Image (cartoon, rainbow, N blue to C red; front, side):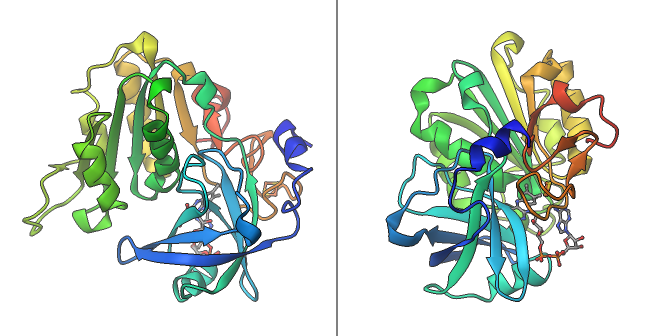
Length: 284
Ligand SMILES: Cc1cc2nc3c(=O)[nH]c(=O)nc-3n(C[C@H](O)[C@H](O)[C@H](O)COP(=O)(O)OP(=O)(O)OC[C@H]3O[C@@H](n4cnc5c(N)ncnc54)[C@H](O)[C@@H]3O)c2cc1C
Ligand code: FES
């Protein structure tokens, strides 16, 4: 058993899902919805930014989904879910008041204690904004902990940008420097952000390498280019955090479905410092 699964073993919801009520559903894009969930008896999920839960629906099995809201926002928690296959499509058909099973929270979180006092570059692509939003909200609610906060977010098109309402608030907030970019914006006259891949936003950033940590969450193709651009800014591997996705079954280090070389993505990750995985074949 890895060290993260050891501390999870005393949680009641590690094996048995808890019934959570859907309190609200918000359409984020044509493919993604945000589900606001409440645990029984007003209990708190007790997660940290970067962790995931196993969502279960009878007849459909389970799927790992990152928690999109910060633990600093109590009462409910939120999951941003893309309609990808059978379980997530069934979830998208559900209504407010229905119940879903939740196990967790699982996995290694973003280690905010190691980011305290640092400037943070919070970089995401596509669905990567789902887990990163939890950390962004955490930074918003604990402003005294961090230095300058920059959000860089890239999506395929303006219609694919997740959390558009949050983005407007982050852009207006003095706390964040927030830039969005899309691969294509043809015909989208009301889009005011940039066009091009998220990597293109990095050279213009003012970075003090010694006091900066970058957190990168996105599709596999994005990592190599973003990491190269960050290294050109003077960041070392020990200053770059990534969150990885693997096929998962148990979520608790038992089944071996999620291996990255000798590591389990579900318990040793999904969050890793780059220097922990950069030499491992197939990690990125
Ligand atoms: C740690 C972690 C966090 C995640 N967080 C989120 C999240 O916040 N929001 C979200 O929408 N999705 C998230 N995912 C992905 C999500 O778990 C899958 O899309 C989901 O399992 C699909 O379940 P399904 O039954 O609907 O689809 P299935 O019928 O199981 O699969 C549909 C398609 O998705 C592919 N797929 C399934 N799982 C994965 C995976 N792990 N990686 C790549 N492709 C996959 C399948 O190959 C298939 O092509 C996360 C995955 C991991 C491992
Ligand atoms: S999903 Fe990681 S060991 Fe089972």
